Image 1 (cartoon, rainbow, N blue to C red):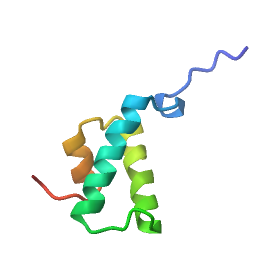
Image 2 (cartoon, rainbow, N blue to C red):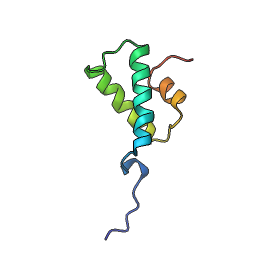
Image 3 (cartoon, rainbow, N blue to C red):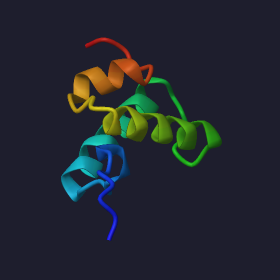
Image 4 (cartoon, rainbow, N blue to C red):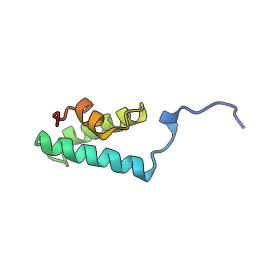
Length: 71
């Protein structure tokens, strides 16, 4: 067994984590008029998950960093 410590970025996201990411994704797609089945929406989703894994767990901050509007 390895003694390697895993980075939190390597851990799977829990259901509650995914719910946060989904809400942010839906909000930003709506705000920016992005079709949810588009490649742009896929890239946005990947960005949101990466930001979340890096420690940005506040929905408002996630929205802003993902390109959403303030407010």
